[in-house]
Image 1: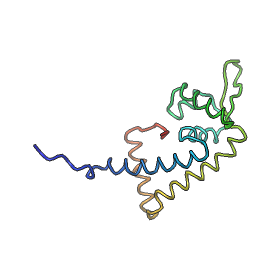
Image 2: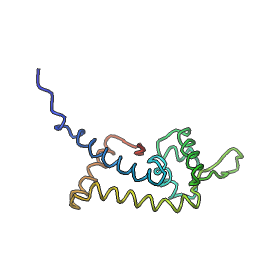
Image 3: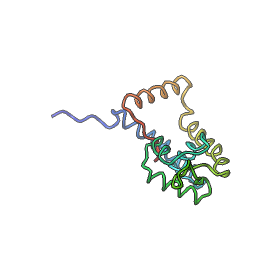
Image 4: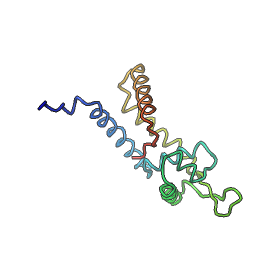
Length: 150
């Protein structure tokens, strides 16, 4: 029987260490502003559109409509999004950022930028570009479409 490879010989091991560090650091920063990572992702998605139907938002974020509804409810309670009547159907609605939500997205985006700078600032630009290219290739090759929510 051959000796199993050491944990440190696996790229996934190192990716997980980096991912945990980056994700937990960002989650802590967001928590200080009273927002979760999942809420941030939804807020950022809504920032680029005046409003979106829950079904469209669910498709964009690869979540169920139920998950979108729960996220929207939490963000409505925080005053960051609102439901608006949509289309001609009385049952139809859209989700949009409130004025407060629209104002907080750039602040939270700055936290994301700072988190990236802290995590990857030690890389020279050439390595940073190469890492981003490699990660995008892996995402495309394996059809990874899920938004990173946790």
